[in-house]
Amino acid sequence: RLVVGLRENLTITDLDLSHNKISDRGTRALCKCLGKDSVIAHLSLCDNHMHSEGGKFLGRAVQTNTSLLKLNLRLNRLGEKGGCYMFEGLKSNGSLKQLNISGNGLADDSGQGEAVRVLAAMLRVNSTINKMDVSSNSLGTEAGVVMRDALEENKSLTSLDLRVNKVAPDVASAIRELLRRNELPRLASRAAGMSDTRAARKNSTIQER
Image (cartoon, rainbow, N blue to C red):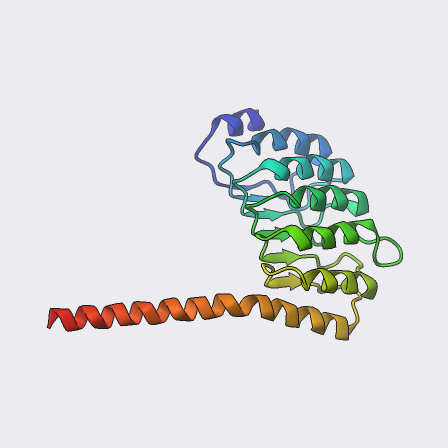
């Protein structure tokens, strides 16, 4: 019933279904609401017992979705396979800006794995995501190196949460430097915009005199 209502509703833009145990089956149904006519911009699905199948359905949905700006999948059980589905789908997504996928068991026993490699490939081609949380995923130093190398080619990501992982300090530091590099043009643009605003106000004041 919820899904039917959401498919017919074109006004709800923020949807929080966290802690509802919707599982993979519920995720599949929900993804029908994320088609081309969707207006949902912020979607939170924290702690919903989603596994790799749920990741597959979401990965397919985000490939063509153009409304989502923030997606929170924290504390699910996507695992390495589900992470691969999600990051593969995000390669062709051009709208999502923030992704929280913390606490999903993305890494294998070695602290890296296929999900990390697909994540890195996604970072090389995605130009819209600017904030990502991959904390508490047992990521090791090699995973950090893979992400660092991908960030050399990425110009959009400015915030990456790596807390509660096992990435060596020097690799984490190199990642922070690349994130700062990406942030600098935005800060400069913001500063220029503020200067233009002040100048416009000054001119307006002069004209009024």
